[in-house]
Image 1: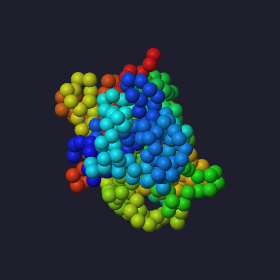
Image 2 (image 1 turned 90 degrees about the vertical axis):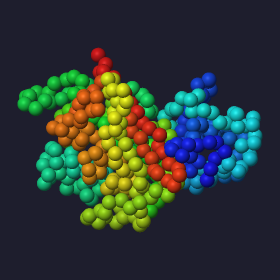
Image 3 (image 1 turned 45 degrees about the vertical axis):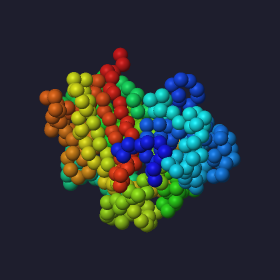
Image 4 (image 1 turned 180 degrees about the vertical axis):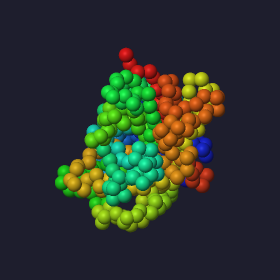
Length: 419
């Protein structure tokens, strides 16, 4: 497929992608829903007003004239597929409907330089998992030794916890260094102050569609129908605060201060050509977690750091989504098996994604092995943890034949703690 809009082969947003987002024109106007195509955004509220979505079964007006994707998410996978197909058809190079309608084209197609990208959803709930075996093993080895690296339950169920939805922020949002209680080694009592061990977590997230009724779990065979699309996630972490607070109930202040996500939500359909098998699971999961067919995706992921004294960003991490031990479908099925009801706009995140090699570790905690192996930067500096004014950027893409299905990026700058 090719679009009548010129798209660079290395662009993250070709016609094969069609990612959804929420934007506001810089020259004024209310937030509304659009899709990215090359260096432009197609305003779906304009396309909707022109009547193009009536044929795909959307009778209600204003689905895309919204400040979030929640209404559209709630319509389900059949509608998502039809809308995506209609948008792709309108953008095809040999389709004159939009291409040759100059007034409509001028109104509907806007340069990305002329819009502000906003949070794509009103996030009611946020669940963060711990689905990478390599990450869990690395962290467990540091704190409990190699023989006890994984907790007894880890290979039987996708471990997760309830995160803080209110502090999920869009890419580009500055984050202040958090404060909290820490207990330094050798000290009898905890101290209070800004975290000294600020970290990143390279993750991916997915937004839930229609959801389920309370008490009625989502079968694993149906779980992917609930995935509206995926985003990049940086789940900032204060490791020293976490080490003191996490027993017995898990992370609290160490995670709740900020979670950054990318603005464009990539549909699961766009990732189908890149579907692959995940890691072999041993022991065999219980029946409710067993799914036929490949359940992972070949998504390249990278992390870059740029300090205030660095001329350019330096790559720290290069890994792949396919290393995740527990699939998205398994995480959704387990989340609901006790009767929990998911709702449109709920965000799930994978937990830190790490691979078997050192450069594939998705956190500074692992890359520096808890500070024992500092990262050497090209300008002569070192890093063990994130410093003030550091800018961290995560990007990701699937490489096709002559095109990329990209996720854009999620970036954030760390500012000093607030007095």
